[in-house]
Length: 164
View 1 (cartoon, rainbow, N blue to C red):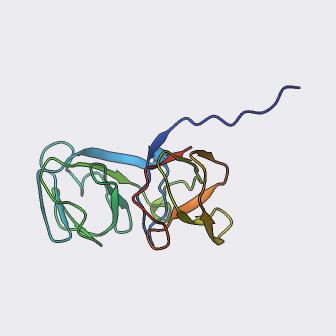
View 2: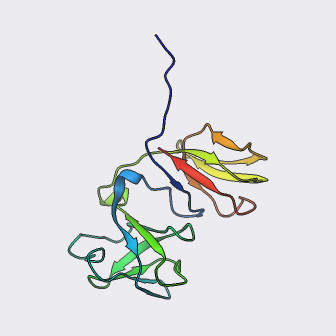
């Protein structure tokens, strides 16, 4: 019998966060580019809005794909406007993805990481729930399933990909 090879089906840039876990790409249900923003507000008009119709809910996760930042939906203000837990947008036409949160029916999937830039310290929450800090992790595949990459305790501005 040959060796089992773990090959990823998806990859996307990890948003460093002290509170938000890395969402599963299988939970993507809205994406596009914002048409407006404000303090803790995201606006998207047109077909990629329709947040009420598409059942966006509090605790769903919003990624700003242009800046690799994340926030939780705190409330759905209208078909075109979401209130967020953080101020993650800085300009119109920045990309976004809305992920269904596990508590709203999304699946939980623990990615492995791919580190593509130098990091002195990497702090993660493992899939098993341990808060672990690694010093000088190597470039390339990082062989551990993780829930979160912490902003606090991770040095530099790393380019880390989640592989699922």
